[in-house]
Length: 289
Image (tube, rainbow, N blue to C red; front, side):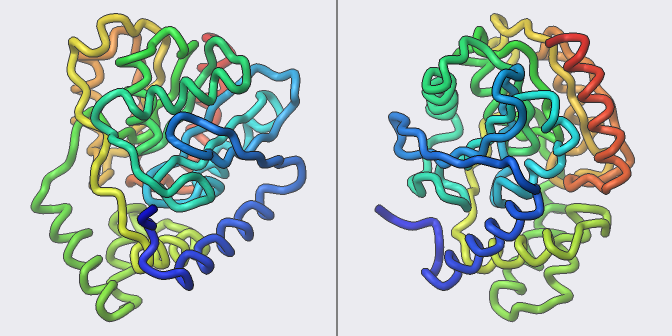
């Protein structure tokens, strides 16, 4: 099996940070492995065991506890099921599966079957939002409602701006470990509000991981004809990857039952924006789940 990591030392360092982040989430987070048709999946679980299930899917090219922490205010109200995405940094199978067709939907379906859940609410930031859109395309009946946070799979930003502000500094950072290059990348991603802990982890991932380049495909209107579940779309106006206005415009054309909220933030939301997002999500789930 080919590894997504460039070195064993890099892998160990990233997993040490994973564990440190997990400790920050506090007591009550359980973990287990689930067998799927695509290999073992490492899953984090928290919240009341008799609570309504809420899947939280991690962002791409980061570690699960990082983006899971964004939604910690929901932990006491729902049974949180948060899998490490296969083929991304973490403890799940390292072999990547296609993000373009039905593989990711089938992977989620296997997890739902394991936990004997007919349908669930879902939250997905970035790549995780793209996974939800793949599920909505192929197995929409498994989604009770969904929250897409700056999701992949709807619209993309300027290739020139991405190259200038992300790709070129990334190449320089991999060659030189330049702090200014890392600051350029993380500052662009977060409007200069990324936490130091997150910045350090992202730096290691940039350096030690063969990063996933294959985002979930841009969703077409015809793919969502059978998807009618309530959908909340939360976007950042200054998102370099998935610009808020473009994402909203596309979503309103192809997602039948969507409401959208735009924030003055980047791809990584600020702490103040996360508070606002969590309140919006809480109200949405109370109404629709």
